Length: 193
Image 1: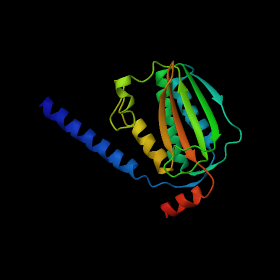
Image 2: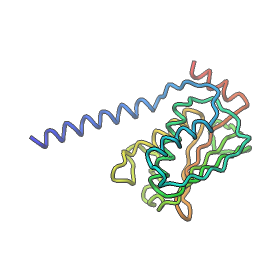
Image 3: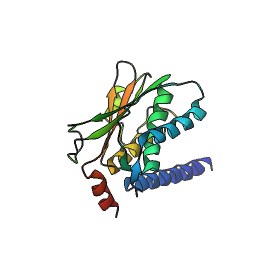
Image 4: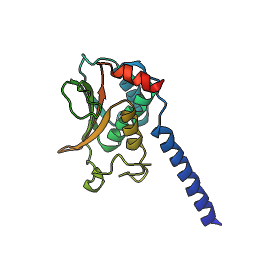
């Protein structure tokens, strides 16, 4: 009856989620020289269609941001996930890019990074979810899948980068750190071969 149908549906969805996690757990990246701003513009254009004029986006871009060795499609998906979350959380989203030197966050020891901050003015992330944010199936929204941030962290990691969360007085800040220069691209190309 109805319970069997629900059980089958749940099993099918569970299998689909497992497959998604497996697929993104070992992404096969198509690395090439990539500029971040066109990817951000594409993601913002998609969200403009989705959210209309309900969210104001402020750009604070560093014009000296270098290109990175990256999979543009994967990075666009990561940016789309972060921006969609921010648009769902608040009415204003601020995008900030900077080049940082001497950053000790990345395990690779790579100290030159591009930092992209996505800052929203929403209600913030509940304290109970903060330490679990990047785990699969963790969500603070009724209609959320809990996959967006988990997949985004895996994409960042596959690029030698990192995604972090910082609560703000009003809203949240998610920061993407991507290494660049000093042979990082060569190392990534060797791993991809």
